[in-house]
Length: 148
Image 1 (cartoon, one colour):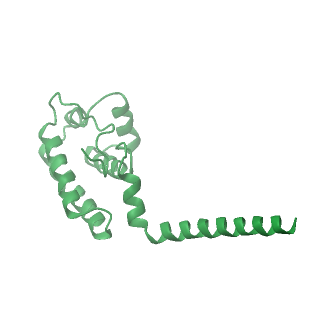
Image 2 (cartoon, helix red, strand yellow):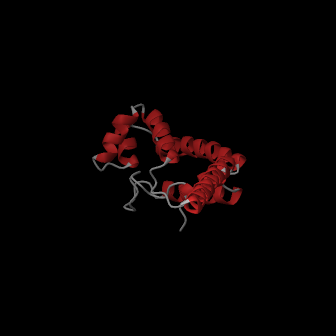
Image 3 (cartoon, one colour):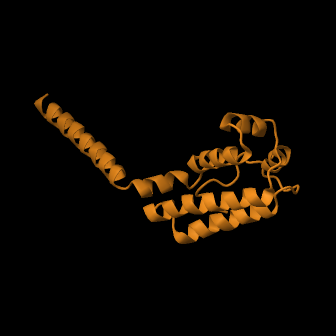
């Protein structure tokens, strides 16, 4: 039995070392670990919440009310129109917000400058289609890290 206990103790020690090594690795590599978690998002992540917060300010409504309107199937275009918000002004404000937000991610090493530009280009395309029949209501869409 003594040999069995020694073997079991070795297995427990090795398992513990592997767990600790994993914890240390991921705690030291937060930008990489964070970027890995957002590569296959559903558009419901941190960036979406920040975007909703910013648009709620632009529309002069609460985030809860904005989300309620989106849940009813309304688009940002429809909400902006109902609230009397100038679309060009809204687009300019959102572009400035996104540039600041994305530059912070570049500075943190979470995304590259090229990825930032890709997201800004995609945003510009969505804004150009605002009000058309192209589906984008702010529900889902390409979240941070989503690739074509």
